[in-house]
Amino acid sequence: MTDVLINGEKKYNLDITDRGLQYGDGLFETIEVTSGRAVFISRHLDRLQLGCKQLFIPYPGDTVLLSEIDLLLEGTESAVLKIQLTRGQGGRGYRQPEIVKPTRILSLYPFPVFPECYKQEGVRVRLCSGRLSSNPSLAGIKHTNRLEQVLARAEWVSESIQEGLMFDQQGHLVEGTMSNVFMVKDGMLLTPLLVNCGVAGIIRGIILDYGAENGFHVEPQLLTKEHLYRADEVFLTNSIIGIWPVSHIDNYSLSVGAVTRQISQCVDQLKTQDIQS
Image (cartoon, rainbow, N blue to C red; front, side):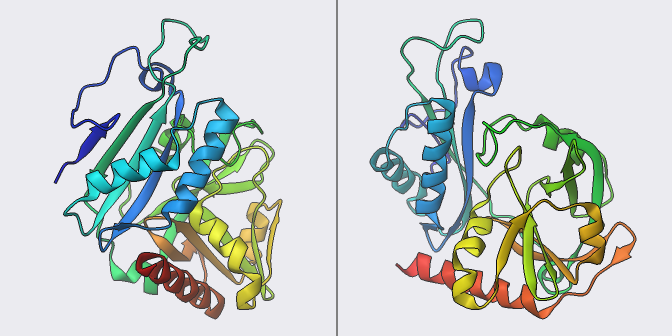
């Protein structure tokens, strides 16, 4: 199994002037590979293209990326695929080079095995003290500047806590360190409004798109920790974990409810359809 491609070539070395290394000047996608297929790949590439537009990085095109993905996944049944796209090589200083030649890095990692109880019984989360900074021009995209998440994840070491929830400077709930957050209150599905910071996750987008068709109303809005404590159900989403119900927020306990189960089944069905398409 070829585990790394850089600009379509099998190699492991990266130019030290690459702006992704120098400044975190780039984007990335983390994608589930199941049955040899990159799950929800069209949605991932759409988000990558949107990120390129926001950061003024030339998008390589779906054809190039899909061809390299096929080459990398040859003989692979299950894995985590990571796509990194940087602004490419550049001189010293923040000014962009006149001619931008993006660097494409595709890599494979073993798919993590999570305890089944995470999905069935829920996970413990904590509230992080570190606050996310506000920058609407970066909101939604998955850029490579993740120091805020690195510092937030360093706030705990206990293996009994699976995720930390993060807030903005005004105290509004934004996301987990690696996930998006949903909550259920009186039958309504709520999720943070991502206008100033946060990543618009792939599973989050699927739930927003397909919610109305499957009988649940989804409302992105400004939320606080008080909303969490008043919620009937809370769950986390990302492309690798899928959906994890939340059983505890610090010392506050929650039930794994019917709405979370329904949405989890819906997402699983859509994933199966995507793999088989």
